[in-house]
Image (spheres, protein in one colour):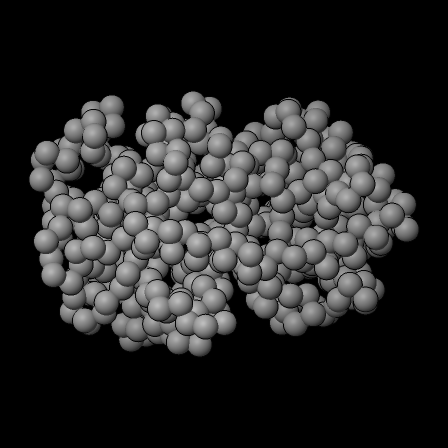
Length: 462
Ligand code: ADP
């Protein structure tokens, strides 16, 4: 494809393979590659966290994408990205104001001319504000357009009003048409008001966030910007998440060699101290342990799932209350429930490959990547119908479906759904078709990257 002559700086607080706590890192590490493939000249910037200290201040991904690491020992040389032991760092406003400002200064220092800055989540939300305030008349930066992607509206960067000066903005920006939000500073709100275009990571979530139930108080701001708000479903990096080549799993396999998947199940069962039995339906669950992810739904359903003959493997870190609950549950059922409270990308791949089902009972889900990664590994999702899960998973009890879906946020609905899934699992012929269909479906970035490119063009044409 011909070069498009668009140059973009993509800003994110986490980029796989450099730093990751969740799906934002997956997206930031793969969408730029797909855009580069479409001829866009991409640059990336992210904070230089502790594990990156031994690297230089730049790296490369893709064919020629430069990744700039923004350095500040006081702010980023710490064990966590955003906090420790489930608690945010108290100076996150300073830490990410600095990141935003330094990223802009970097453009000037390096003499990098970009047409557009693609910002992601609240950690980068001050960039659109800075461009229209502090740097409004800057000869290098003026005229740069911004696209802001909301990956999760549940995280807004809210701070006490006394902290406002840390942003470096004039006090006049602390008002209702600015960053003021019920007497506090809301950084995300700044991004939503000042960016030229807004996107979120699925069409359903783009509608949901304009309602009080999902809008977390920003539904009014979002509705006002409805014309500029688009929902684009995430893709996954199909080279990285490929059971045919994944080096983290026991045995590689394809839709033509599903026996390989059985080897991975055996490996996972024995690794987790579960009964090594081929016929036992095995559910995998990999997730941040947060209210959003539906653990208050899962925990009361877990005993019944185990009683019904499921084995379950859980991998997650996060809220201490869920860590405690899950630890207890695991101790009570050592032979059928295996709980791993760590962040472990190797084990994650073993779970995607070795499970029969992948559970996502989310309360809300902007897009969700787990359901797409699991499909790629022939592991059938059981999900709640919300946000991106509703856009990517259709119930397999109707023709053409690729997973099992329940609607109401009730433990008995989760259980009923899992039992329907098990029924399909026991029907070997039907299950084989479902697994093959899953493994051959397209969750690449190609179509979605094209939609981002269309939006880049649209905003640059203004
Ligand atoms: P979110 O971004 O809300 O956390 P997603 O489903 O979009 O959820 O993406 C989660 C990503 O993080 C997936 O790649 C998943 O495999 C990974 N992940 C989540 N928890 C862990 C963990 N404890 N160990 C390894 N990978 C994890």
